[in-house]
Length: 122
Image (cartoon, rainbow, N blue to C red; front, side, top):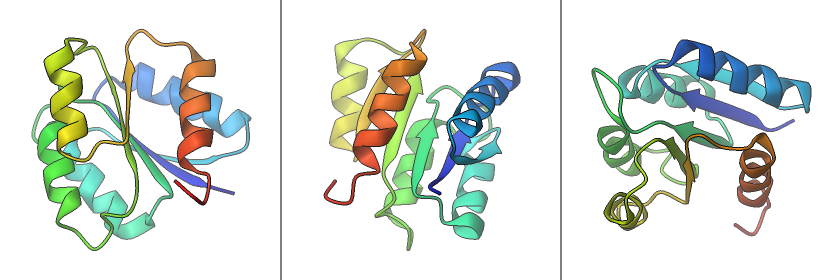
């Protein structure tokens, strides 16, 4: 089963996403900031990463920049964030984020994005 890493500093949201994704059959792991997320990527080599932007210690932009320089840069990253301005979306895509999901979100939307990016040809 696919492994997904959720990086978000909002504990309740992170745990809820993990619970829902576990329920539909994914192996789900958690990190509360980008720094911890980088450590978990190195340790777990997930198939997909879902990352918030606004977090303490290392935000989503810092995470993706370091992730792109790592041995695991092939692992796709989706941003799940409350930052909804067009410039934020454009900046994220420019630096290598594969998908951009705006909070609040529907679980069906998140699941659809996950399934799309876990397809072998993406």
